Length: 80
Image (cartoon, rainbow, N blue to C red; front, side, top):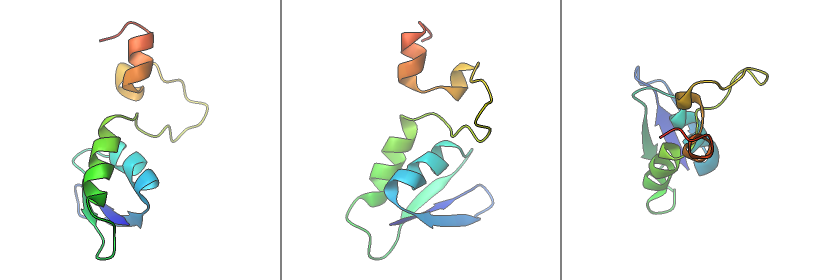
């Protein structure tokens, strides 16, 4: 559906769900729709990435910093 590019223009194609997770994990990433993608696919990915936490690449690693958690988790813990 879309291509996600990192700050060095290395890219990966993927579905909206996985592309949003990847984009949320990048600094200075960007997203572009592929030619046959549904309308507004890149916009949906961009907006979704804003609302999810970066992927925890180490499964057992504790998420102790607010930047490692979603907005909902931070709200539940009383962090603004």
